[in-house]
Image (cartoon, rainbow, N blue to C red; front, side, top):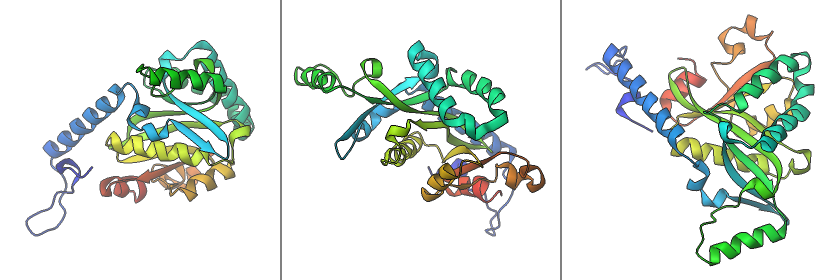
Length: 259
């Protein structure tokens, strides 16, 4: 998203100059509008039909979108239980307080979800029958299927940069190691770019070395917003790192290089 708002102002001699108050306010207004438009999209997944289904060696799952304040009670309980099963050990003594925070975050109106579902063959057949009859059925819903994981993401501003922030990516052990995580992050990055976000950010516990390696392999680096880079003396006592992957030079300058 190379716009006039995010190009560094230069003097007539080509030397960078500090942006004026008008330019700063203009960029903030433009970012606010980008976030508003991204949040207003009802179903981000609908923009990417190739990502409605994931198949690998006979293994098939389907993706569905969701909003935090519209999740059914069974779905909310599933998300809470999976998060606890996957992360309680990683957080250790911090888990009780973190769990309370995460439960509030999960049902917030601004929370967006990608739900990972598996269906019986009969349910899929019904969907294709509807498609053949002209009934809209772009991707099946999770109401009759079995949930196997989820991604919780939001559109936020970090260091004056519009970003898609991945709050959680949680999968059941039965579907881990099948390339699904990479598939989901590719989708997340597409959603970010389609929404004109300049980066994807996420938080990883230092003790979760597997997740850290996974994101590093996808090109994510420790952000300048991470405690270890803001102040190494404070960061050493923090249990997490903030990672990012930027798509624009301005975002790279702020979120990676710390300028």
